[in-house]
Image (cartoon, rainbow, N blue to C red; front, side):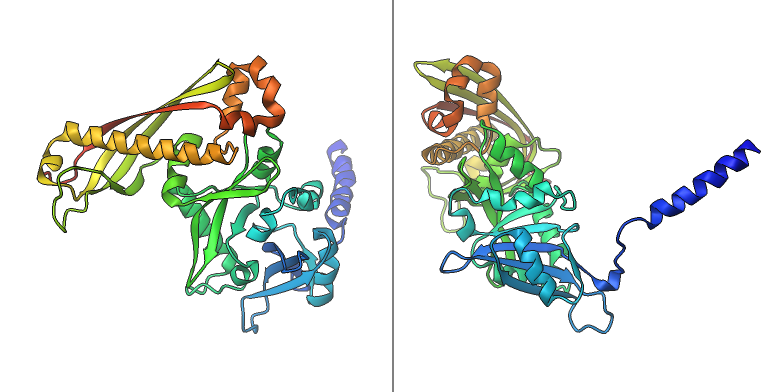
Length: 373
């Protein structure tokens, strides 16, 4: 009897809960999957949105709109005025930022509503566009897949292969408010096709300072993120004295099977010092070196170590010249040299630019391929 009485009370409550709220039919909704932000030639903010079309009779699977507005929230009323359904940003998968936007300082506050409004997803991928956002958001993949799915696949694939970041709104927020680290965002460009071209580096004010190409991005991400699967690392040119002719290009293609990085942080003579030991095991997939270099494994291993060390030294020289720290070595400085770090935490980029960074690379060749000649 008591059980039946409880059930009598609970069922009406459940009915009320499930019926609460403003329910909009799917066919009357405009569910935004991609939001784009760019600047025109007069530095006016231009907003773009792309959403799927659920009408089976529609000629196109997606619709795109652009409006001029002051803020993201302000743009919604203009989108509502143009679209057939009620605009919802709860399912935004990708945020496109025009390069012209990030070339200015202090653009980050325009994203305020995306963090303040719980309807927005903090897992939205953030991507910088090298060129006009309009060209990217209107791109139609040859595979006829929806653009949002195509872009997600392209970005995720390149992140998995350690070629670029897969930054989300949440990670971007953390980078801006972490004093010992500066933001890094994936970079795409529309040419004949849409492709990932590398990683954008921003300073602590969010201003674009430089971009890394795919090989440089790979070197950076080897240190920044733990690697859980083999990575193809192609076209390492090994400088040698002996010329092997037109068919010996002095290039190697490797699979990086495992990477472990140890970082030691010290402070001496008014500057920080970071000792990075990068240990990796590799398999040779392609060897276009001379006959001697193909057979002398120890010599080849030494050449690979020297070449990677040189590439890392050039990478850190470039990063330091822009006073940015996309790896987050400032976090190590705070952890192990707290008293010295506290004195410079509000200007970490400047302190990092003066730091001594010593990189050592240890390579172990675990395989020379199926055939060893």
